[in-house]
Image 1 (cartoon, helix red, strand yellow):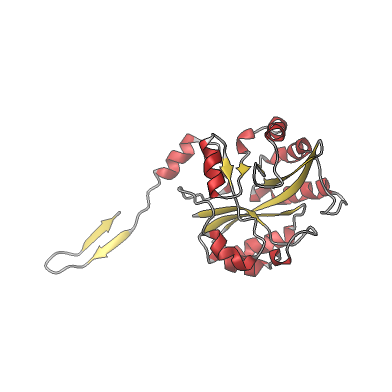
Image 2 (cartoon, one colour):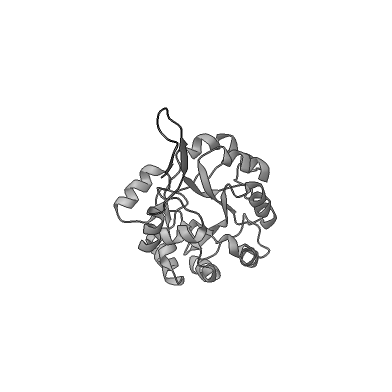
Length: 246
């Protein structure tokens, strides 16, 4: 099971490649053809709830699709990007919050300070994923600490690396890290998806994933010890018909 926490479905800002644009059915057809089972829609300074709901409809339970947004951060002239991913159960309220935060500012011109983002979304207890180090435009350790101080649950802050190698280095230094495709061309997604993070435990919900990143031991043990039962009928010469459950 692979996860992609950084997906673009629209060319929103002037620098976005037109090949980021994809319709909901094509999106689901492509993602379903890969090992990605969890994905977050994170367009630049924009959330399209109608498109999100259509994607969820086409996903038909085969994919977990989470609502998100990638926001421009400006803190003392330091520019960075911060992804916010919400529980799909909160999608209506999340949409209202994003709309209010962005106001009438065009996506190309929008930027806000990091504590404002933290305060705006804290009530949803979302996942925050700041671009980190060589994932540009990155957010500094100082600004990540500001974010942590402005939210109730700093355990849901994950630093986004640019690739698996960087992620491995960050993890080795004690950072909670993840990375996504940041897809620019949907024709390339099947090959890009092969390099995405793989979850070693089967995740069935946003809440479960959050407990895993918070290192909730009870949740980890429950998933780890989950038993799968399958009945196999065996016919063999000279022996009775056997029924084996494993």
